[in-house]
Image (cartoon, rainbow, N blue to C red; front, side, top):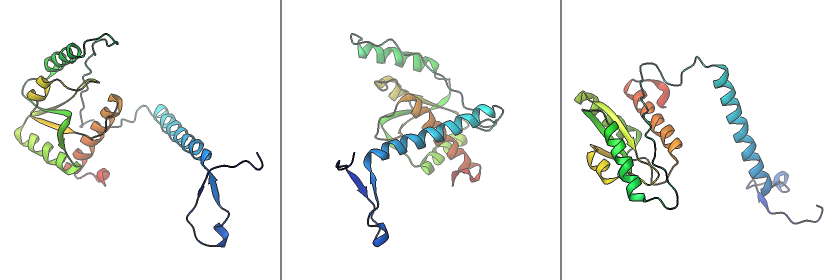
Length: 184
């Protein structure tokens, strides 16, 4: 490897002692992968060894209803898949609930905007339901049924990540309402 040219990242420190400091770019991916593995392993080991510890308080109920998706393949009719999903979603929506649909056309809310929404819904004495569409989005019938449309981001996320972001956002808003220090 002697004499081989490598692309490096030069650190932006001034002074003689930093003149020869550089980092091989290929090391960056190895470092970030290592850090991710270590962090995830430690977190998962802790969770596995402490099953009695709940991530959410007992008085913070979350009821997750997962709707089975219609089978998709290259020959599937996407309109029919979306319509089937919509029918299943609408059938699963509880009566007399305030419905917020996560949709890319929805409003962008800050955490404090979400707090205001939750306080408003609490004041109405209604239960709250969030819906997330399938991989091809929500049908128009679901958007029309919703009381509010909320966009988590202009980015597209996989469903397992949307569930985490949604619960975290709701929990953070709840801690603000409850004057819990978590939200800082």
